[in-house]
Length: 437
Image (cartoon, rainbow, N blue to C red; front, top):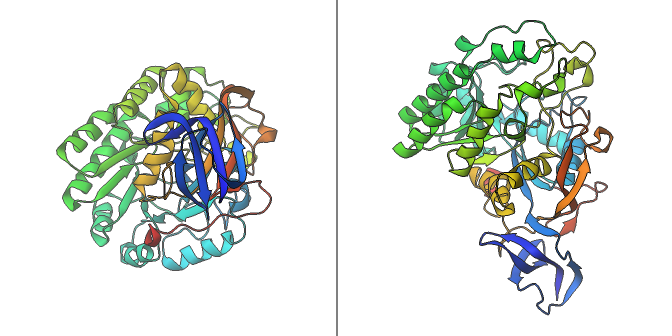
């Protein structure tokens, strides 16, 4: 007798998609049997042709609580994650107040999250000028590594590092460093305008290219782990490919908006499309897909970065003044699946990009896979059904989205966290710590 059996003719396992029956006991996957195996369980759920996926792992989420909870909070962000099939997130060290740049600040953030989280939550620390001495203690407290900006972060309490300060941080602790790679010397002040092209011109591909080169060079000198966040500029891909070929510990991610949206199609004044680095053209987008397919880009994560509607300047449509961030933790799976299937990719590919590889990036060996011994984080996903994005149906605090009105393929039917259905009512998430990985 086990607690739960979930059957699907389309279970996505590490060996590929196949019919299977997944047994769960005490929150863990204990067996993966043939679909029609005779098993005894307290609950036996047959999904039929609805796919069974492992819970997604999103390692790039801005929760913003405490301090800017009116932008987003743990309850709303994790409820949205669960609704989108995401069962584990790693929270970024900004835009909360205080930012997570000391062990004490981590304790403050965790205290704010207690009793609120609907999925499992881990934390990144932050590397800012002057806190290199704080990094070892913060790492020992359980953060998965450290985020650094090479350009203005948008909030004054999280200033960027220059090349020397990045080197100092890399030397301070043996940890994963995740880098917002834009070079300030190549950025220009955006002109106040409702025209997206004016904003796009202020953040050219050269800014990413130069910053990626800086990050790789620093990683080479320190023999450090360097991960390039939210890559949007395809011109930087050869640098990353060469670093990998050299044997450097360099990885990169991209986001659903860079893989599915096109600068040429962004309407005038549609500031919900603003993010940094920016959405670029369709030719650039095609190169990102190719890099994802050949492994130069490792994973796809949301960079869920919401704010209040007034900060998006939707009243004026001014791209220069609007906050740069796209909130998509609930929509990432169907957004990517809608595009991936038309490009010949499989559900197994999407699971690799959005579950296993992000889990591997932070050492979550029991997440992101349907495998014996893994956490029973499961998702019933109908890959053939469609829906139209209604902002009112989104769970993040301020449901502003560039996907409003778009018809997407793939519907999350049920999400289980360690074998328990996530309903959005009783929070059952746990804190994740590097110390436990």
